[in-house]
Length: 219
Ligand code: DX5
Ligand code: ZN
Image (cartoon, protein in one colour):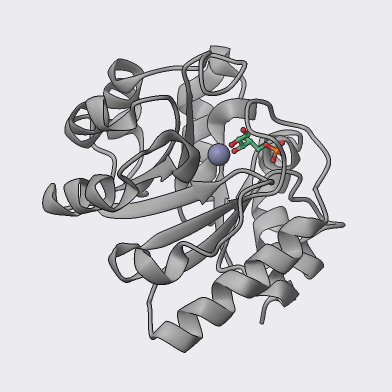
């Protein structure tokens, strides 16, 4: 069954505590944290200080998606802030394998994300260390964009490589996930659906139904 990871990027930050609690009560599985630096992506969000403050609000795992240059520099701070999973972008790293080793040494789950233009050919050489492979299905930086169709093929390729190489990473899909695109994403082999505007665009009272419906598609 697909796991749901609402991204607080689209939450109402004036009611952030309630929004985070609604993630848990909706039956979602993870809290997705979009960390942006205004350098790797053309937007800025929040950093480890905020993550540490919101950590006590839920027992759900924190899935940090680092859209920042030089991610290694900040990994210990996000680990210390209470993130269970840290994902870095392949495009930001000269030494991706070493960075994944570093995250694993800290006792965390490690993920790699790829922008829409980045191919998955490198996966056989680092996928054994990964707990997560996050396919960007929009250009990172903003919520509410349209799903880029070529992501579906990439999900399928990542699943094929996992099968062929005997790896265990979960495949996460991020960007433009909604009722329309979910069936295709699930069919392609996604294990985790990140949802920003679709989840937070609904009133809190309707979010459990949204999660239930999404999970029912994948039954
Ligand atoms: C975009 C972020 C996404 C974003 C998705 O750079 O990585 O996690 O929140 O938003 P939606 O679901 O609205 O496309
Ligand atoms: Zn994200």
